[in-house]
Length: 199
Picture (cartoon, rainbow, N blue to C red):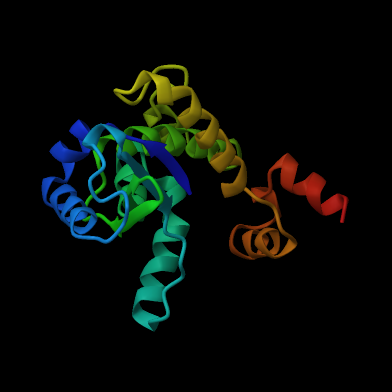
């Protein structure tokens, strides 16, 4: 999960009803923080790609088709595909009082980080897939440029992004065997082959 702090002004623009709801809950609570100043309240977006495999057989078939075809999608189509899989939560913290809820759409601050992550994932995948049309569609990675309007949180966000990228590609024997079963031995990266050789 990737988390980052967001100024109240941005959250209020993105989700005015959710802000109002959270503040109402806080103000009507018995918490000693119920009258805390708005400047002392911390707001965070947290998000993750939803990797749950559907239980329903029809949805499972669609999921498997999409998963097998995603490596052939050009960048903008792939980004749309991945954005549809993102779950975003908003958290308000006032002292030790906290309210969290899932939000209805992916805010621009999350889209900008997810976009960079998708670029990195696609570059890694295309080392194996070698689809020139897909490779040509991937814009340059802007990991060194601010993707949020809050400069002081940018460095932390990039670190979290890089840590998340490492966990996305976490290697297990089962995952590698599934990949071999679906795409053949030639689809393995050097890292995956090294991992198997060391088991």
